Image (cartoon, rainbow, N blue to C red; front, top):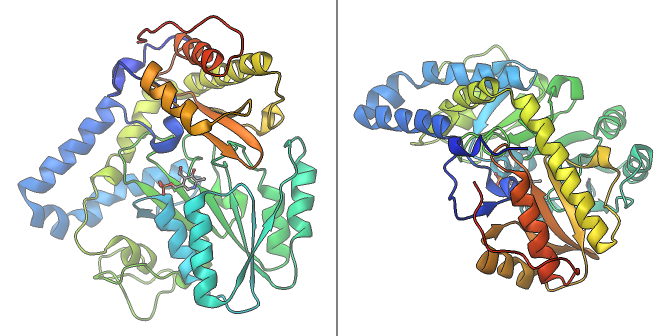
Length: 401
Ligand SMILES: Cc1ncc(COP(=O)(O)O)c(C=O)c1O
């Protein structure tokens, strides 16, 4: 795999950046579109935000709706997936005795969100231990279904998990939840632009995802989707100009000419919408560069790197390959001081990659995006071999394009 796409990104050349998963990275032309919107805003803020915003938001909302298999009315812009999921968690009418069913692979900010909700409502979080290694959809579904009781009101799952980089097969758990009238809330922080999405096809109630990770938009662009008949249940985290006290049914217009769902959540005080406005440019960038082929090459490189590290460590993978996120792999490493390895990778080798302990596993989480190349993953393997005493050649200090 060559790295001839690297020139389109703003990443530092002295860093081997193998951590797209944490905060994404934005291609130059998309970032320029974003800055053009910011300059236009500053040239006449009242015209931009006061008169034109509803019209300006139509193309990104429509493009995003189409990208997610739904329509513009069902997606509302939020600054990040954490905010989108907080809107849902803090709106659902939970009470003492209710249960929120989730797994032991969730992202810490969302674990905290539900912990906060339980304090306010008296509801309880029930954590399912997902059978590992992750090799069977049936075993996963059975474990989730076994956790459902008459008290379960919410099923909260990541679609792609953060610590283990797994694609959870969420379709059957969602169907089982629906049969039992359990609300489904999905954390899709890593999915848009990473795996194909058809939100109505998933039959999910609430789904929040980031555009600023794998769709490669600037930071601060994300969405919340809600099944149309449930949109009326959601309240914004900040009450502001877009709020309507009553009459929020679909088809009714909010004060800014969108549905109340969109106006209430998007129109909160003064905000810079430029990151959302850059969404069509990010989709165009993908189309111009045949992103499906780029992704296939990234997946092959990610899997090959994980396999080669496995040969050096002798450790088995966390999952069967079909459950690993295509461009992100949680690679097991031998027992170590993960903070020290992370620090050494950065300070000695200028390699950016998360290294951490999750449950009993020590993990280096590799992300491969279009700007990465095989010499970079070779360099990572050499550095890990040296730091973890895996018996390979010492890593040479070098730069990669
Ligand atoms: C699974 C998961 N959920 C939520 C988030 C939070 O994303 P954000 O910080 O953009 O809200 C992350 C961030 O990496 C994540 O991995």
